[in-house]
Length: 261
Ligand SMILES: [Fe+2]
Ligand SMILES: [Fe+2]
Image (tube, rainbow, N blue to C red; front, top):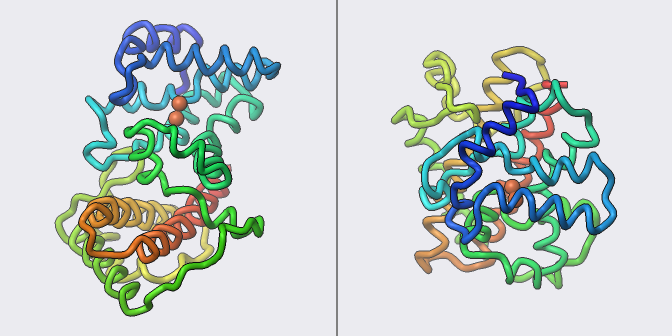
């Protein structure tokens, strides 16, 4: 799985010319622009390398066309890490792992930045978990005052998301982040476990359960993307549901990272 420098060069040569997820720029140009800007900003070699490679995961995952249009978040910031671990240290890997969270954070604290994102980048932001309100809440940054939340509406929306998750579990469309299938035994016994917090046992089964919960959150997030353009639910309810999914996803991802280390 580990790549060599010449493997990375080959990937850029073979796939770097592709358009970046529907943007008017190629993958290679995006990588070079990002690294150049970092270099101009006085960043060190680790960060410049991270900038060059931050989206390499897209090219390795190799989803055709524009995955966000099909509701797919390829998790490229995590997916790429095992491929690069043999070559680079934390000074390169950590900025790559965190670059999506950084964008989510920046969009929340600097709404003007969010407004200049391209349509595709805004779509991927929603799939990646919106503007990180959970982190902002943890840091006690004011979001401009709470709007009134209608609890009946919220319950209705939560039910919709749970229905989407339940049917995804039944029709067998859920997959782990690496695309592999969940074991049928786990799916058969998991039942409504996804509504309960995960336990702390460090076993493969727990790990798979965490992966399953993550996949379910993805399903709920995709449903939320569909629902949000329908005009049925208020922005407050949608934002609240998104914040709940963010909180769940963040804690699950942290637990999975802990297990990997
Ligand atoms: Fe990225
Ligand atoms: Fe990028």
